Image 1 (cartoon, helix red, strand yellow):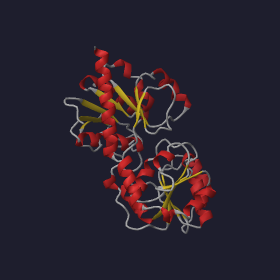
Image 2: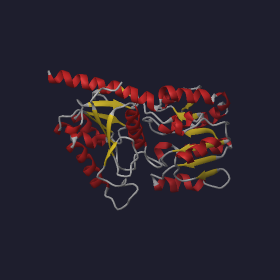
Image 3: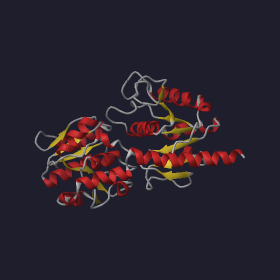
Image 4: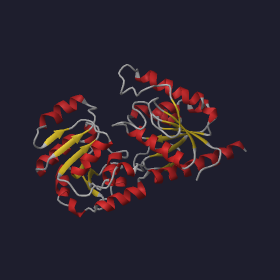
Length: 346
């Protein structure tokens, strides 16, 4: 559903390149939306770092992501980037922002409608901004991750590029953890589950909380059972998926979406996740993995992994969490916004 003549601006973060080389969930989703829209014939401009890769038009005022270049001041980069997009707002029929609360503060300064995809609320302290701009246009990435009072038009689940994650031919024997090394992601619980089950655990991801890594992860590392591999790219993820009996995602706070859950399922890898937040929406309990409430339940769930059909995991991702499914849903949201804006102009 391409609406003729409509020009869309996608505002991606600039912490990392779009798409990111390794970590960068928001950049991943912004990039997937951009490429999906462009493939369906939309006139799309991506506002991202200068080294970003896209088939759409690219506009950049920041050469590299501030997480990849320590000489860049993050706040300077962010505000040069956001302001550039809004200074060019008149060129577009819609700005689709993936920039959290900061971009909201520009929305009343332009005539162009702005859709904000909320990728999660990082702190209660940012909520005054959302409350001030609550009448804007919002999309949530899961039904569980919503704040009362905001003008949500839809929930649109994040979509992944299935071609990047081929179905693995056979199931491996290792447990894997993929994600930020942070208490929120429950790496210490994954370690406990591995110890209790006697299975090896491979940990991969950026160290976001160095103190947590030093105190609760590093002391358990060894060359035999618990190993930390560092951050990995798509190829590295697929190498882990090929070795995986299951992905452990024992998050300690409600998950907002969890891209890695869909990526693992796309490769046919079952996911064992805490039943918090969006995990219940992304993982179908007993079909693509298991939802648990503690480490002991996770260990018991590992015994049921042979019940999970890898092909069924991938098929559910194709139906629910593919780029095509996501972009089609956003097209419906765009159409709603254009209809609402047309009525305002009458």
